[in-house]
Length: 479
Image (cartoon, rainbow, N blue to C red; front, side):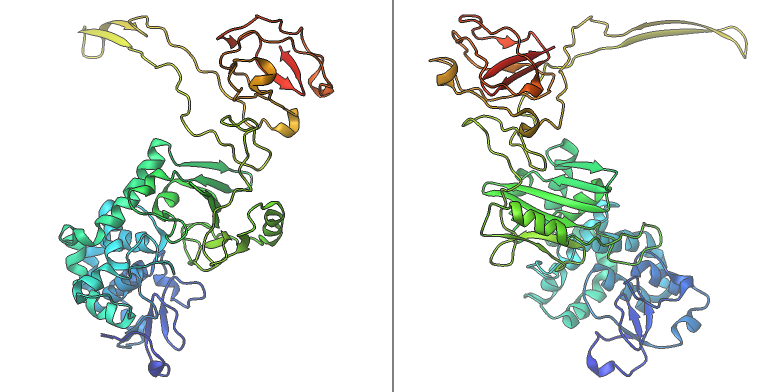
């Protein structure tokens, strides 16, 4: 067999279209609209190619056509073409080929070497228009930048077997890309980056931590999102990805990264009409330099907040502002608060359980066992951290926070106002508090309790009730 990258000159020539879906050809592809024979269909084009070369009906399936073509360059394309060209010999590399193809096309993480092989071939954890480097392997073999897919195939195909079996020999090609992915995976493991699942709507809200990218040069205006880490932890059918930066939040909506292809084992993902959502977001958008737009520039992208240059732009419309400078804000519905993760540390947890067991065999089927078990053997105290009740909003409680000048001459500004939250509020140095007076309190909160008299508190936490509210100039405690 021989390979020829697709061009108009072979339009009328019988050919096998491997991975891509070229007209007037026999398809061995997982792309939407393919005409791949049902008996060899699989998740990736590489697995389809493996099924083909293993089939006893290979001649019938290929119609004895010798010309192989593809119309794009990526990991799955390279590996599927190499498999068809190598024939049955490729079968011994099946366990290396399929994970690498899934890493390239779907950002799937099966093992480190599979991801590294894909990075060496296509340069990132998902091929995209923003890819600035092209194929690291082609560039290395050519000794210069290669932006021609035909030449990339010529350079890379002879190197595939050595790449798969000796990936460490190519470390300079994949090290930087792998470090970005490893940093992103670690960020999710440690909780700095988070995924919140909304099962009713099948939405995954993904908040990425900026520090996981700072050391590796990630920039959301130029680089693709960390697809591998997101696909490993998100379970929804639509992703809202938020990346915080110093100048605001960068937002994008994505579909799962396998959803662009025809797949036999994963659920089919329906594309949503987000037009109404984009209109609503643009109505409340405060950044006149950008606009929420539908976006399909990448195979699984759905929408982005885009600046005048056509790239991602910072957005602050979904972020609340604190009522007091330096304090914590009470987010409105649909907005993001400004309290960072792990801003407060609770008491340390220390616990030792101890067990001593001694068995005495009596017969083959019976034994006598003495057991002593102690839970928290040192009798060390463990202090609980009270939970926060999510969903409190200024709209529900009509909160207002008094400044230091209104409460005390020397008091620090109150940084926290709680709404229906069973936690204690620490208000800094509340040296002699003035009496609180009822001044048009929201009736939905109920009648206020007795006012706090002057000199009632200094350097203390208000602990007298579960809920402490400062509402329109009225101090109330809800039992």
